[in-house]
Length: 260
Image 1 (cartoon, rainbow, N blue to C red):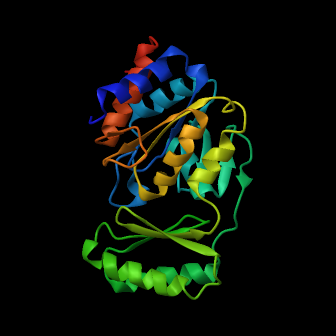
Image 2: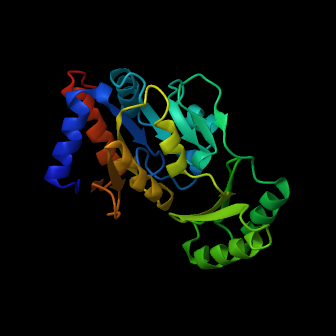
Image 3: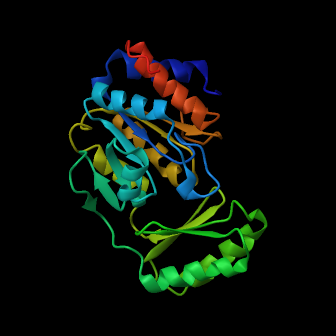
C-alpha cells in the first residue's frame, strides 16, 4: 500500500476517532472490487459485504457507494445489503437506503445506443454494457482496438446536438453519458443531505471519472485517495482494491469489531 505514513495517519485518525464525524464514499469497480474481464463477472468477497454493513452502522448511515453503474445494478451486486448511493455517474442520487432515487438525467436514446452498440463490429472482444443512463464499450479483451473504438465513438457523438452527451474514457472502456451530470456534482449534492451533512468525507476512487471528485472533497474538510495510480489532488493512494478492502476491515477492527 503506497500511502504516505502521514496521509495514512490522518485517514485512520479521522475514521477511528469518531465515525459519526465522517462520511465514507466509495467507488466500486477497481476500488473496492477487482476489475473483471466483463462487468457482469465482478464478485463481492463476503468479508467486504460484512465490513460495509458494519461501517454503515458505525457511521450512522453516512456510507455511500459512488458508481457509474445504475443503482439497480449496484443493489443486486451487494444484495442483500443496500447503502446510500450515487448511480449512473450522478444521474441517480439516493441519500437514504430504501428510498426511491432522485433522477438527475434521462437515459440515452435508443437510437444512439444502437449506433454505439454497432461498434462491436470492429472486432471480437468489444463488449457493450447498457447502463440505462449511459452506454459503455469495453475493450479489455481487445486492447488493440482501443484507438479505433475511441475514434468511432467520437464520430457518432459529433452528430448529436452540442452539449447533450459526454464521452468518458476509462480503464479499457469508453463510455457515453448525458452531459451535465457527473460524480463530483452528485457528491457535492449528497453532502447536503442527512446523515452526510456536516461530515468530513473520505472518498476513494480509481478511474478518470473519479478524478473530479477529488476537487470537491476538500470543500468539506475531507480526504481523497486514489487506487492503482497517483492522482493530482488526492491525499494518497492504494495499490489495489484488496488493499482498500483490508484498510476498511482494519477500521472496523480498530473499533473492536473484527470481521472474519
